[in-house]
Amino acid sequence: MKTIMVQPGTRVYLAVLLLSAMNTWAATSAVPTLPPLPYPRDALVPHISAQTLDFHYGKHHQGYWNNLVRQTAGTPLAELTAAQIVLATAGKPDQQGVFNNAAQVWNHTFFWSSMKPGGGGKPGGRLLAMIEASFGSFEAFRMAFRDAALAQFGSGWVWLVQAGDGVEIVKTSNADTPIAHGKHALLTCDVWEHAYYLDYQNRRQAFVETFLDHLVNWDFAAGQLR
Image: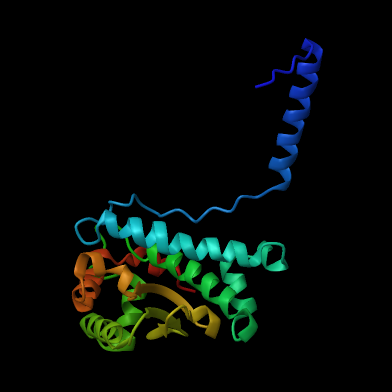
């Protein structure tokens, strides 16, 4: 290996050039990162394992994010949020791939916030009143939400959305999302198999009931109310 000798003054000059180049790169280059989980990966144990979050967040969610960054690089969409990209690409067949990845980034980020350690039970205040007015009782809502999740054929999502002064349950397939249809989401449960298969295998009902009884973040849902 050949060694190149430089004078001390030259070393200083090269160091300044290198530092200048690094500062310029930092100012002009953005390295997108996946939105972080709102809790540690083992925070939902025993209801959702750290292994599930390692795969669900670390592989699936990360994969959608990586695809979205790649697909939008060098385009005006790269300057938008995931929600803005969803709205900009919804219903456009030539942008279906971008829509799918943007929607999955947004859906998953919303899903993580829809849960918390020690969650579940009933909401309170205005949200509970809206649920009871719309469904007759909280228990009737719970059953309707569970049944909607079980009725979703294949991959998808079940949502609680605000509808005026009330609330309603909607389902979306694959990457579809309520915000693409002008609906205002309050919480969601992911019923893609990768959301629960490591912990619950094919027992989607057990997963959804656990979500409702032990995981759902009603404080987050109430905070979304208009």
